[in-house]
Amino acid sequence: MSIAPESIVTFLDFFGVFSSAVAATVLAKRQHFDIFGAVMIAFVASIGGGTTRDLLLNRHPLFWLKDLDYAWTITITSIFTQVFYYQFERLDKPFRWFDALALATFTVIGIEVGQMRGATAPVSVLMGVVTAIMGGILRDIVCRQVPLLLQKEVYLSAALVGGVFYFILMHFGVGLWTRDLLTLLLVLAIRACAIIYNWNLPDIAIRRRH
Image 1 (tube, rainbow, N blue to C red):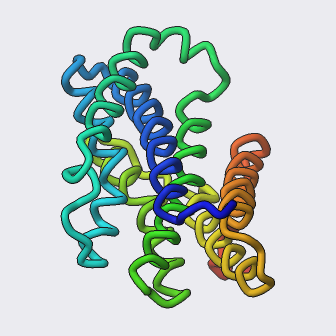
Image 2: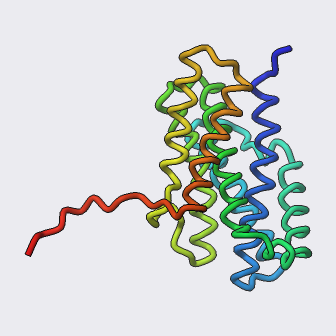
């Protein structure tokens, strides 16, 4: 039984929105935002990437305006996370782990939406990267944090590698659901290794010898 791309995107979208809302709310609570401020940060993080993608692809109406379940999911998830904030903080690096889940999921979503809009492979990879990182950039800016993208973190590169991997799998005829799952797992694995082993991108500046 084949699964429609739209169904996969919807399923992954809500999972990504949930993960992003948790990560954003944890960060907002650390910055002492009130209940409404934390919900707002969750909205910015969860829909920022997808909104940017849809605007670039001229895809209307915007996904979260067409389906208000996104708004409910973000709001409920953020409030739940605030109520159990101290339990979340007992986890090891909760912000980074939930952010990693969102990064991996949104990468796949962006690629799939690009493909559904008839975009070329490079543009679809770009849409995957945009969907994955823009919400986090906006979240970090509003929370007055240096975005992870602008640090030495293996972040954008994980989404980029995942996008290339997706089209390698497509070239070899791997099925849609399997392709999405393997791409998601690869991006998550790269980001997880970066978190656990403190992987950073190398400094390419040439140093002068004295």
